[in-house]
Image (cartoon, rainbow, N blue to C red; front, side, top):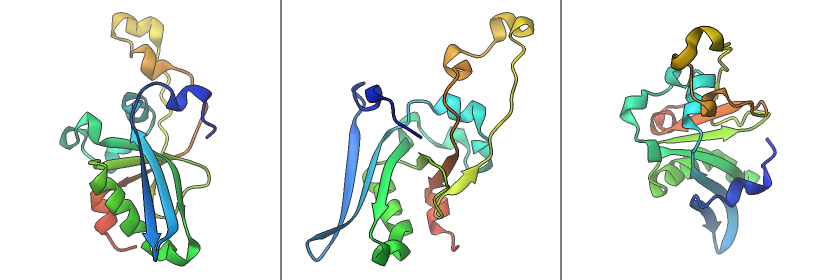
Length: 148
């Protein structure tokens, strides 16, 4: 998913995690707090993986970049688990195509809101916003503990 120019300029904290082995960088992960959690919740079946009531709003993160040396690829789940721990996150969302193998694909919801019938009960503009379509994958603590 291409990033708009303003993605990193809105004041939201960005976190970068670097994996090193023998003083050599072998991996990097770049994330920030997920700001569009309502959009994700309304357009994807994320409740198949988590109960939203069990996760605070600031525990959701968006993984923008993740790269790991192929030699260390077998440890990617452990690296992501440490990213979750160090970033104080319980869930990571990674909008990407094709899907990354350690994360779980989240099916898209196909909801058409009859706005004229809903009137004042219509969803907010944030949920109704037309965004560029993307595939969404998800990772949480529970999934890092399950064998493949």
